[in-house]
Length: 310
Image (tube, rainbow, N blue to C red):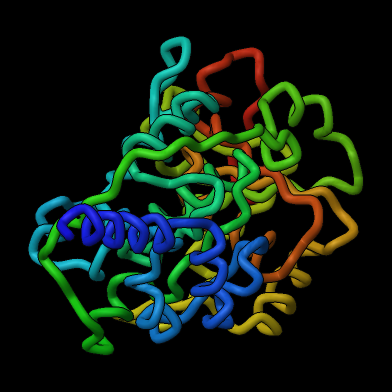
């Protein structure tokens, strides 16, 4: 009798975590029917997903203390500094594929079949940095919460202090070179007319009035679009409407027929613009320079321009 009971329980567990069962669960939720396209989701769309077996929610806020005080139910905490490692003496560079695969699979319990939902605070720039890392590995099953933590809390949606438990999984990625721009690649293309380089830092950093690096300024030819100008709101910041963003970028001659490279100090702010252009506006050819101004300015053989002109 006991053996039959145990077999029954084991059978239920196997069914619950089988791909076919997960597909059946997903089919009942419209948001999960088409997960092969990174997207922006609203807070209330997430309410019905927090307990889905095929969903992993990642909290990327800057403070672990804030996470422990309360977070979206079932969210796993990850500090964005885990995405910043030194490379040949240059700090806060991008981890390699193997590092990211282990982080996703072993530490976060994310497999290639998992739909990842990301959020942070302060307009989501920690979340967009992780989103770009998923993009780089070819993982298309992810979404960002519009308005992030501030919007979730402002709407009095469920908050938990519980720590979720997930088993380790295997994640296999493939570097998508079209999502990445290296400094040599940029240097070789500076004179091309169909290329737009966007510096997403603050105007004063772009102009060279501020900055902690040895050399200040910007990449010659780069235009300045401060990343936060794509948002609206005060305490709760959300992305502007798609049609407003279209008009805004066209005013800088940033159009779909051009190759676009975004950069900032080390990838965080520019990842926000990357997500905006690639996944909200669906621009076809957008790359991110992950080395950023820290890498570029450290090499004295690479040109720098001071002032507020490209």
